[in-house]
Length: 167
Image (cartoon, rainbow, N blue to C red; front, side, top):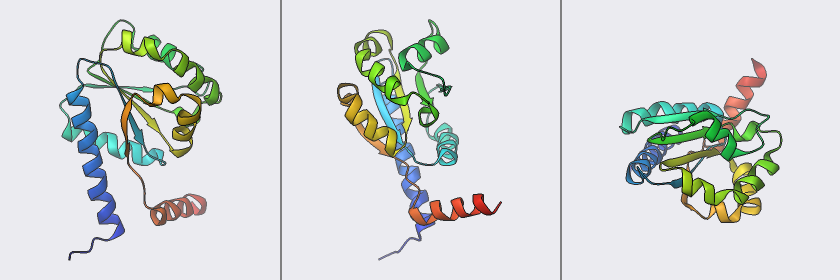
């Protein structure tokens, strides 16, 4: 049996998850679908996005939410206007100050997402935001087929936090 180190295992896992995300976006192209990408490290999100461009021919529009955002639907429609991108990624949920309000309003407005958006919507969440979606927006969260995880092994997270503290 071949044993992979945590770093190699993490890379293989990230590539597989990135391919799943690329495929999910391609399959749902032209129709609304909700995809949840869970990653607890913002730097890792960027690495995955860079890798995603290699695996996906989809033109991906990206929105970084402002900490002052209070309605996801409004933030998206303000950003994209009348255009319908092939896919849309929303990042920055973890920095939103009124996150509970944003999630509750998303659940209330959920039907508008389906009516108005004809593209896959990828929400980048961390474990905390994912739990809030389950509790505060269960109807909206149920639209996501499954959550695609891009987890950083705990030992690498601890190492990167220690490096950040000592820097």
